[in-house]
Amino acid sequence: MKRLLSIIFVGFTLLFLPHAVYAMHITEGILPPKWAILWFLVAAPFVAIGTYKIKKRRKAIPGYMPLIGMIGAAVFVFSCFPVPVIALNGMATAHPAGTGMSAIFLGPFVSVPVAGIALLIQALFLAHGGLTTLGGNIFSMGILGSFSGYFAFWTAKKLRLSPFWWGFFAGIVADIFTYLGTSIELGLLVVGKGDSFFKAAGEIFAAFMMTTQGPLCILEGVVTGFIVSYVYNHRPSILVELGITEGRTIAQI
Image (cartoon, rainbow, N blue to C red):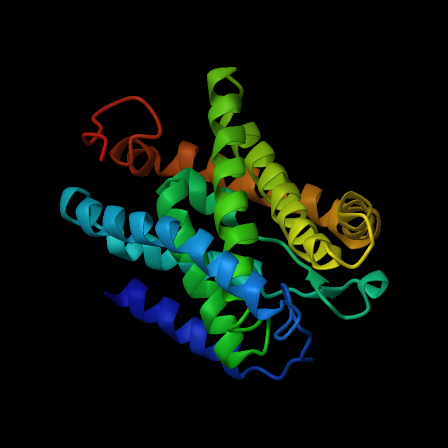
């Protein structure tokens, strides 16, 4: 309980710290109604499945909800470091995602609503992203980031790499696919206007990766790698209980 209260205190402290306001993720009003609705429809099933898994796993894993609280706070903080991408004229900013880490510890489906809550809080209180673009931001950061990051983690684990590399590749890949998703969403806006979707999406993705997001990908990979390695070496029971490493594991839910 003390740990959970500490997380809440830190969260509210972050909310009220003075900060420059940049529109993070895809900015409010960028997506036309038809695309905004489409991305909400795409994101909804993943959020529903993730929420269902949370309800089942909290009964099977002691301390599961405090763990979600800590991981959720980490995702919130990770994605609260906006770096403006000048080439995109204020439509979006670059930032770490954190979903590679959350996908490792919580699984990709649970990582989606965790990312969604972080995005919602940012949209409501920090003017980062937006409510109409929430579905699109969940798609890129929550869905693509979580599932690609988890696949990278799973592959590194199958290749018998060390835990640092599990987190390193999960962090990098989740970041790359998050911005690939954002590039696809923004690139689709030119469809029907005589421009090439592939050209637009490619240029936007290049603007991200060649300016700010490239270095941020590597940084997030290193940070995620150290976090996973630390937990593996100092709190291995957490990974065992979650079924991430061998030992006494819960039934797969």
